[in-house]
Image 1: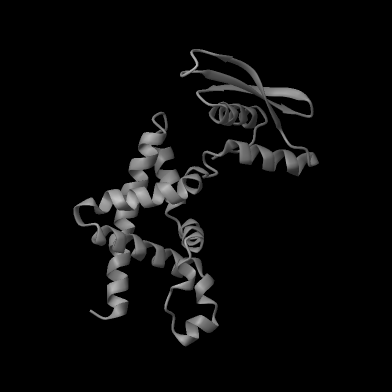
Image 2: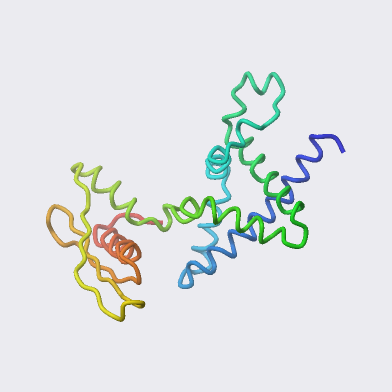
Length: 196
């Protein structure tokens, strides 16, 4: 095989492994999400735009071999090229670790990019609420602990979200972050903001 063919074949393999790894991760991370929501989240993570970000974060943009013409056209920064390189890299990891290939890809993704994978706007209601309030009057929503209950190792938090010094909504969660997301989602619904 020549380099181009090998690269394309690795990309094909990496694309499949990536989708399995992300599907497994979001399935377990969001037990209450519908199949539709999980599909949307996975589609966001495996989009060229997001994979290009991950490729740049791990330095792949500097390792891509490009023709002179593509180099002159700033191909090293093109999301489609970066995404393909990232998928090929995952394909190479999968092959390198043989029977443990899927675990190796999964561990690489979660160890290095868990925050990126979780921070989909489909689930980041705090970011959406902040965008909305800043667009209105440049003020940020403020989150405060309203209550907490349960045993030390199994606490539940109640967080309130305030906007213009008014309690807009409150949410519960097993962590303050989860409770804040729930409160932000309810606030968006009460403010009639489209959340997809």
